[in-house]
Amino acid sequence: DNKTLIHDLTGYSEQKISEIQRFFMGEITTTRKDKYWAISGLAGHITPETTFTHYLHFTDVIIGDKLKGSKQKLTLNTCANISGLSTRLIAREINKYKIDNNSIPVNNLSNLLIRKIKPFIKHIPQTKIKKPGKIIQAKNKGVYFEIYWNILNEAESGEPALSLPYKYNLPESDIFKLIESARKIANIQSTKNKSRLFTKRKRDNPVKEYLAPRKPASRNELDEIKRLMSFFQNNYIKQQKLIDFCVDYFIHNKVSSYNYLVFSSPKSFRKYIKLLLMLFSNDRFSIKLEVRKLRTIEAHSSIWESSALRGYTFLNDKMIINKNIRLDNIKYPFGKLSLKVLHPSMKEKGTNSIAFVFHLLAILNSAELEYF
Image 1 (cartoon, helix red, strand yellow):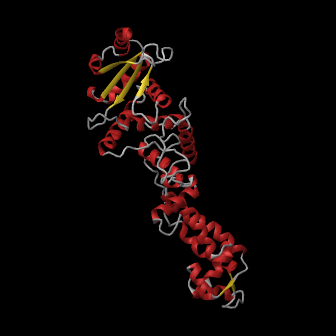
Image 2 (cartoon, helix red, strand yellow):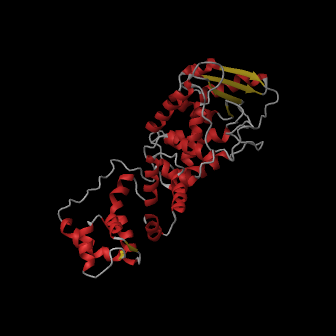
Image 3 (cartoon, rainbow, N blue to C red):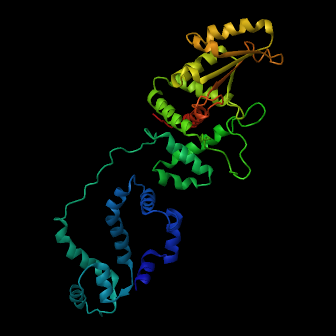
């Protein structure tokens, strides 16, 4: 019967075949489209269309080889079912060899099939493989930030890394580079041995390791993230040095429990605020300058204003200057300046939108994956 034939041809039982299918393609609840992409991934093809274009040729070679070496004997009706030939044609052929209709060797069918099909081959137009309009190369040009974040979020939630290339149609090497880069960035610590980018999560929501940047929940911030991502995709090449500096400064100076960034150097602040002024309006900033001695307030503020804020005089009115006796004069020779980007709703609290984008850019830069 058919079960016996399947076993002889493949070497696997139906149960084993189902287990293999679930391992590579997921449970039965998986959509057919996902299974097709999984199959094409296993075959090394870029799309399911390519896989199914080659499907008949592939099965002909494999099953044809199995049939030629098989000693299985089948009935006349079974041979007709698996070959597509009529029972009359098969009966006429086997009668030449005086073979019983209920005991026909499978390997005798191959020559008969070839003879009957060969005359029609020249009249069958060959299928032309339609090349996809755009193939994602190893550098993943044009891949959106959202896809990268989804990959990291799924990996953080426990999704096996081996299943992600098939789901997102991206090279396996880039998936692993992305995850390893996220792990590297997540391990950046402050001087107090605390993560600079991840706060402690709730105990009822534990994860094995933190990988994906924390995405804000408010609609205003999510909309702003899309705007910021669009800016970086369109302007990275011409502003590469400035963007790379700001991203690097952020991930090595951010403190996870605070929504502001601290500067000790007017030069660093000048470069950082130059980029942020391309992203936000003037009224989105809150600035505080702390100095150690009261008599140095005027001197220190003039240094920051003339060096770091040249051309941005509107920020002078927003600067709050405080006296701080405990301030480290060696660590902060020009004072300590704190910069906070306010929430899009214009409330006093800070926004996490720029933190999310800079964190993701740091991961992509470390993994050497392009996003423009």
